[in-house]
Length: 543
Image (cartoon, rainbow, N blue to C red; front, side):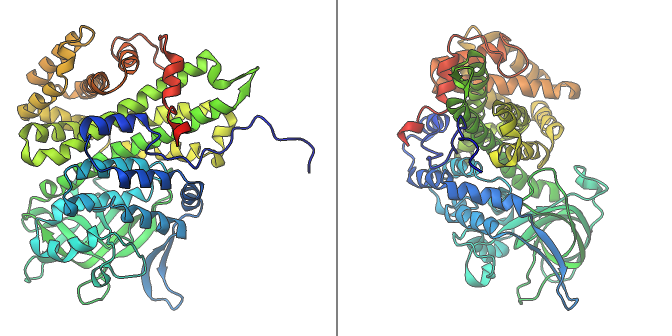
């Protein structure tokens, strides 16, 4: 009933280009790929900012996937049904090549541009990014079996998703998942009990056992680990066999997850399931680790994207909401919060895209290979660790309005922790940095070169020298997280110094490294709070 007028509510943030309005993304591309072709990225940014596209993300999370183990006649079908919005999101993602384009299209900056697109598209909806990311990461492992690669790679890289068609037969996009962990082992995959028995035909085995987490179980194929006679081995498991029959792949139940709810994660049983060996028998972890490392890159890109969208929502609200006679972003304390979140977002985006840049260059540059190795573990640890706290702060900027589902912020907040958990938790990645420090000095050399700017900055010099000295002497396990934090902050500071305005780098260094702020967001001591707060949306008026 018309009892009152609706006033002082911020309008819906939509119809903006998520790519061209992002100053940190622009800085990264200008720094790492100034001649890259960005037309497709900009088209994706426009699509990602549409109201109708953002609505797909909301629908895919409101209408959750449903497990159907049997049809109405009692036949086992083992299917998960998704809302049409899920399939539309996947169709857009594959159309723009987020799943596997860099492996087959060979552009100079292919992996970096694909990373930028993944970062932009993660701001729409993160759950469907899981099968997209796993498909992207599966190609290097699949190429260890050339016969499988010849058959499957064209489908995995195709830009035409259709859930009703068989990808191999119809040349539409195929998706590849991963199933490593079991209930008794989790991260300790060497405790896996699923066993693989040779069939006597080439690299074909029969698998019997279970998997405790199988993400995106409706994917067309999976990389799995199982105990072969020669030890833990990696296998390629298709859901449909070459003769068109269904492989044995039983879905027991779906996980009831805190976040990532649009994406189904299942417990599965394998009973004589046919799978082809990839890589050497007994070297399963080494074979699949390259897939894991590429999905770790996507975890940091996804976290950066979630943080960016949360920041946009917070700044937009504060620009339009009045309180006590002024808009929220005119109050110095709110400016402090927004400025601090802007620093976090810019630093995360730059670091994630710097690591993506190393993926393009690593095959022909040993130093870049070291950057990729060190940066993947470090960025996965730090960026994914920071995102939940930062997104929670952004949610608070909207007050009670941010705590309701229609604002999008609760979904972003629930989504944030998963990137720190999947593909190796914080401890796993911190231990990986420890392993690098103790065994791979060439990676420390590469990292030291990355923070060269710190040697010439009196604010950073002592921190850099102490850190490099500690890494070269070897890191104790109990210190692994502390060393990761120090290394990530120094690297981010150097990236900001090199590629962003002075006020961004100076405020970041003062607050994160010199300790001139408190432990919560919004405790900066800087004369540039207003300018930093505006930076998050400085290009919106142009789009």
